[in-house]
Image 1: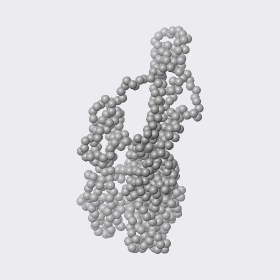
Image 2: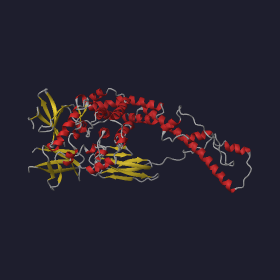
Image 3: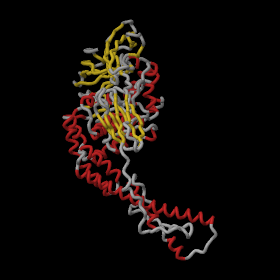
Image 4: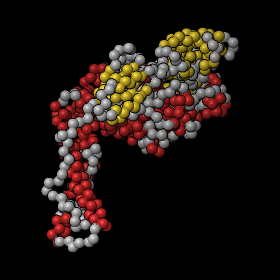
Length: 606
C-alpha cells in the first residue's frame, strides 16, 4: 500500500503490524502534517454491524483529550472501503523498545514513566472509555520522554462476535485481568490490573505472569500466582511493592479504587525521594538514561535518609527500615544509615529483654499457683498466717502485668502504638494468688534466663549448582549470585538453621525453587541442584492477509498469521522452518532462529 491513498491520506511507510491492524505513516495534504494511519484488517470489520460499531466507538474515542492520550484526528466513514483511524504521529519508540535498549535500574524511574499512564486511564474512565489492552507496546515515548497511551478503545471498535469468530483474543494475554480471562465485561479495574503488570515489569525486569502455553498463563493469572516484588527486586521498597501488588489482586474490588489513586500513591513515593518536577525528571532520563540513573542514586540518598530519621523519631520503625533499606542499597557502608539501624536493633533488644523478664515472672507465679492448687486438694486445710498472705500478694507486682502487654519485638510499630501518649491508660488489676502457700517471688530481681552460656546455633552450608550459566540464585528472596558457569564448582551458601527457600532464575528457563530445612548441628554440605526447564519461544508471522502457519518438517498447523504463537523448546536455541499457506493457494516459507523465552517475528506479503 506504500504510495497509495486511503481517503485523503497518502501512505508513506509501514510502521508496524499487530493482530488487529497495520500502522502506517501517512501525509495529510489538507493540514500539511504527518499522521499515523491505523488500518484494521478486513476480516475484523467487513460486516455491517462491525462497521457501525467501529464508527460509534471511534467517535467516542475521538472525544478524549489528554496530554498522555494519543489524539484521534479522523476515522473512516461507514461507507469507506477500508476501516481506519487517523491519529497524531508520535515520533518516538514504544516503551517496550526503549526499555529493551535502556533497562530501568531504579524503581523511581518506573514510577516516573507510569504516573502519566495512570493519569490517562483516569481521564478515559471518567468519560466511560476502557482501554482493554494496556501493555508496553501500546505506550509510546514522545518528545522529552513523555509517555503517550495508544489504541484507546481499539478492542471495542469491532464487536466481540467478530473477534471470537476469527480466533482472536481481546487484549494481550500476559497483561489480561482475571475477569477478562473468564470472559466477563472489562471495567476500569481491568485497566488498573493491566497497568500494574507493566509497572511490575518495569520494576522487576520480568512480567508477573508467564507460562509455557496460553492455558498455563491464564491459570496463573486466575490463581494470582506471581513472585512478590521484593523477592525479585529486594530494594524496590516496601511501599512501591504494596502499590504494585495491590493492583494485581485477583478480585476487582480488592484493587485500588481508581487509576487516580495509584497515580497519587506513586507521586507521594517520588516526593519522598525529593522528585517533584516529574516532567523535567523524565526529560533528563530520556536524554541520557544511564547517566541519569547513576546520578539519581546519589540525589535521592539524602532524602531517604531524612525520611528514615523522621519515621524513627515518630516511632514508625517499619517505615524507617524501608527507607534505610533503600539507603543501604545505594551505599552499603553509609555511616549514618548504619548508626540508625543499630539504634533500631538496640531498641528491639531492649523489648526482648523486657519480654523475657515478664515471662519469667509470670512463669514463676504460674508454677507457684499450680503447686498450691495441688496441695489444696491433697492436704488438709491449715491456718494461714497473715504475713504469708501479704508476701504472696506482693509477689507479682503491677509492673509484671504491664510488661506482659508489650508486643513481640518482631512488630516494633505495634509496640509504639501500645505506648502512644494519646492512648487512654487502662486500669490494671492486681493479680490474686491461687493459694497462700505459693512460694513468693522477689519482685526487685526477676529471673531473666541467661543466654550467655548458650552458643548460637552453628550455620549450615548449602552447595548450590545450576546447569545453565547467566542465571541468578536467590536465597530467601535475596540475590546470592548473578553469573554461573556450567560445570563449575558449587557455590557455597551459609545459612542459619531453619527453613530456607533457594530460587533459580534464568531468562530462558522456568523459574524454579527448592525449600530446604536445615537442622542445628548438621555439619554436612547440603547439595541443591537446579536443572533448566526451557521456556517456549514465541513468534509472529506478520502478513497482509490471513493464512495458516505450519511446521514445514511435520506439517502441523501451529497457528495463523498476525498472531503470537508459542513453540515448545527442548534446547535454548532451535531453527524452525515455517510454511505459510494463503487462501489463494500460494505458499511461502520462512526460517526462524528461535531462542527460549524470547519473541521473534517474520513477514510475508501475498
